Image (cartoon, rainbow, N blue to C red; front, side, top):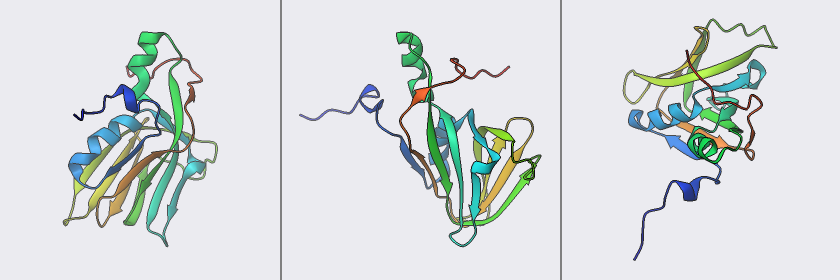
Length: 158
């Protein structure tokens, strides 16, 4: 007899999620909430129509266990890749400030002419990045092993 996998069984595996439909996006958005990245780790590859970020992602999927077991909260380096990109615009992001560190709060979808639309990356401090795509295709993939969060705390919003 087979059984469903439990959440705990997947806890130590690298995360790899894909969003191809708007309803696939909320779990990806929840997992990238409070990810931080230097502006230098953001790239738009026009020829391959890809916009990508190398994030330091807080491991929300592990936070409850870390708190319960009184072990350090963790972060992990992850790639957030958006495919089929037509245009990228930003608001309150100074591309010339190469020392700038951005904090990602959420991903939201604004539908356009089907199957296209805009993926909005909302940043802390009133910043935003709008990525116009011909079709929704977002991949979130962990690329390193988890490490102890430097702050030692889970992010909080006041």
